Length: 74
Image 1 (spheres, helix red, strand yellow):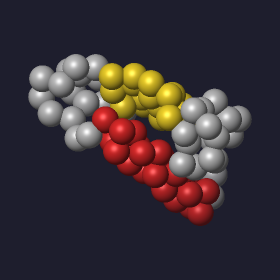
Image 2 (image 1 turned 90 degrees about the horizontal axis):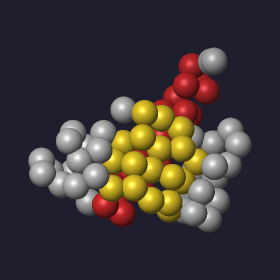
Image 3 (image 1 turned 45 degrees about the vertical axis):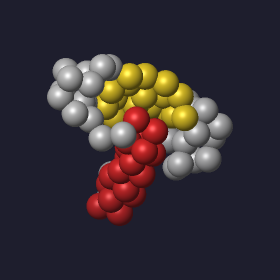
């Protein structure tokens, strides 16, 4: 992977994570776990970005259903 590809990947993950945070709000200790599907801001897919946010620490695991789009685990 080139530096440019790595930079693009990080930017896409940040964009997707911001969309999830916009949906759920900022995590605070005591918040329950949350999961769902939203439109992907990276590829534009409708309800293709699946996410799960842990209630215990606010970490997000997410994956777009569009091949080659974003996915990550914190």
